[in-house]
Image (tube, rainbow over all chains, first blue to last red; front, side, top):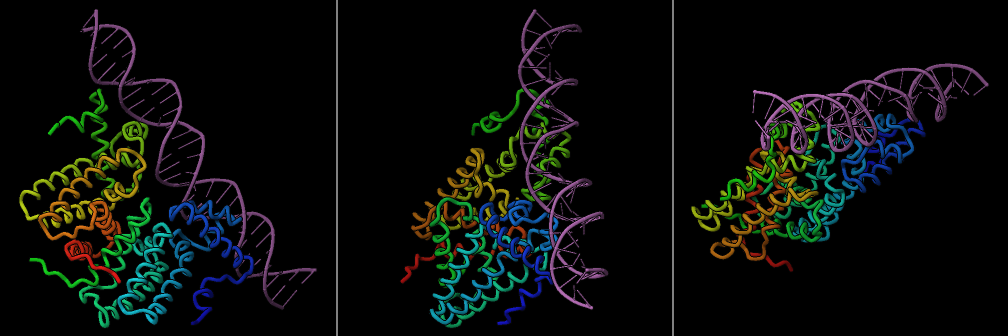
Length: 196
Length: 196
DNA sequence: TACGATACGGAGAACGTCTCCGCTTGGCTA
DNA sequence: TAGCCAAGCGGAGACGTTCTCCGTATCGTA
């Protein structure tokens, strides 16, 4: 893995700038977790101990900041897909990973989902493609070696699970997301049913 | 049908007030359709030709305005459930109505969905229950007379379709929502699959 | 140590939500 | 028809948020 690739792209030359960037990411992680993806960027800057201008120089908009915060986790999530692939059967690997993806999207109060849904800039695309590729790999294998139905694209699958995350993100029933995912998985593994 | 019931509850005594309320609703319908549920309330007031204060007296918050705008459509939607019930088989009635519900939620850019997800105040509850009851009626019949699986609640079903609406509301592929709904319907009518 | 590029920070413009209160106006009563 | 008064209007303005601009401070280098 090219360790320096993703990081070097955004790391400033001066050490104080790099430090501020890290402080901003840490603060953003906190505040987003508390107040959701619509949290005040001013508050993030304040908690990071920098001015608003500094925040906006490092991250030109909310989306860029969200993407940066989630980048590591999403990379980890997609790495998990590889491991899942090695450990479990084709169907189980897909199911488990979708569960992890759902948990991730929900834990971030739809932030990750926001990345999938809204994509105003290029930064979101990275994560979108990353997730899409991970899902596509698992799905293709489940279609080849498992029982997943063939007429299903990774994009649709991700969109559906993203929808579950979005609609249950603020709900009070913590089990609901699991039930809905199980329902969807039933469809994924069930034979396509022709409609008369 | 008690025609005056829902209307009388909110109609002001003075005619100018009632007129302003109607103007506000019309403007809100326009602006929400253009800019989504996060549209500027000031802009709505401006386009209605009233001051912001007037808007906030009639509708204390965004949610109340959203609810009022959607109220008629939601009532119509739920009325459609009754008609569907009479015209089609149990399964078809459910499928068709869910399709209509999805179209409604998407057409409103997640407004209707916002009603389902966020419910800070009582006004949202009306619509939520209305929709839930309509869905529950159709689902119960499809479970009794049709092939819908028994371990499924109307709440879960609505939440799932709401999720489709949310995640596809801003998407560019207009067919995706239909595909996702079809997939979900496969699960609804497929036999529950026990997981080892 | 001195210099120049780099980055900081906060003032402030623009916009949004929502409130308050003095003025207007509709509808009832005589 | 005239007059009263409560219901209702509207916009100024307090306050929060996003995002920009530019004078100033600081880092890294020579």
